Image 1: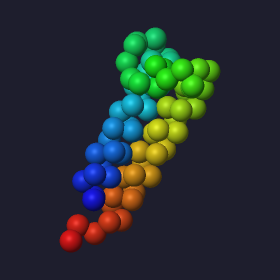
Image 2 (image 1 turned 45 degrees about the horizontal axis):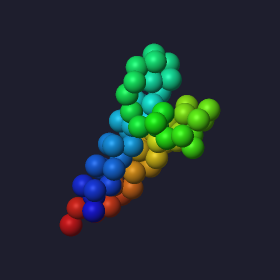
Image 3 (image 1 turned 45 degrees about the vertical axis):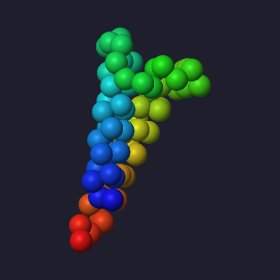
Image 4 (image 1 turned 120 degrees about the vertical axis):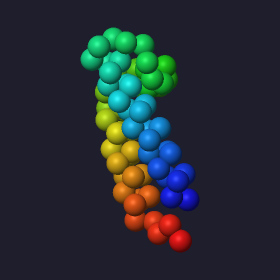
Length: 66
């Protein structure tokens, strides 16, 4: 379970960072800008993904490995 939380946290961190990178540099990376529902809210969604990533990392850290 711990590895799953870490993997999900890593994916959320990468997608959040890629979304911010897209917004500030206009590189076409990440999935956040491709979701039509989030038009105009891409920065907020990217920041939310980064916060979610840190929450998942904290949850993974609190889980005992055995």
